[in-house]
Image 1 (cartoon, one colour):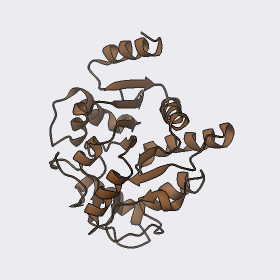
Image 2: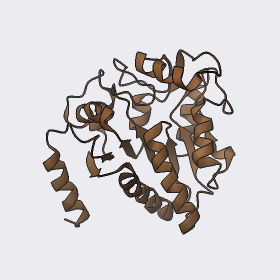
Image 3: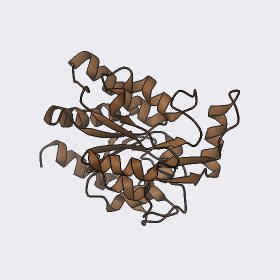
Image 4: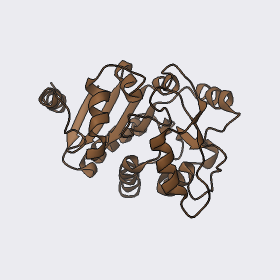
Length: 252
């Protein structure tokens, strides 16, 4: 893993966004995997800023959302898809016909569509405090592909907050499996805040374990992890990670 630590989420997101800009300038038809959550939203706002101020085009980009609540359509106020539409897709010039959301009962169709477009170039991810990725919760099958799954205790608690005053929170979701995520050519993980510190340490330095699904990313060939200071606070080998990153930035 390539670990990048910056003082603030904004500084880390700015660096992550430059990776995407480089890809889009090389390949205007890039395929991006999108994820919801608080940390990625800071990153998406930076992409929007670059689109507006630097004229970087997303016109020919294809996107795949990593997950969604079962029984919730794209326009629902609590849908991850609506959040992504509002924060990114409807602002930059991505064509809605080139945006794909996993749906219960259409798992294989979703997987087939990813393959038909040539696979995902960069998959954006966040990590939960319990180490979940998408809705791949602790004790998930690390070899699973897109599937429907019950919400974990932490994920259900988050859902209850989102659905407060607008209906009952769902208890199931559909998510790319860890095997689907691992197929992406590159992964950008964003984790900000002290509440993510334990999960970040397990993901980067712990053993690969289904109890910390994010740890499976250690097996991927190209993962960039962007952290703020609080999220990096429990790394035991922080100096090592910072030394390597300094060498990369210096061209060493």
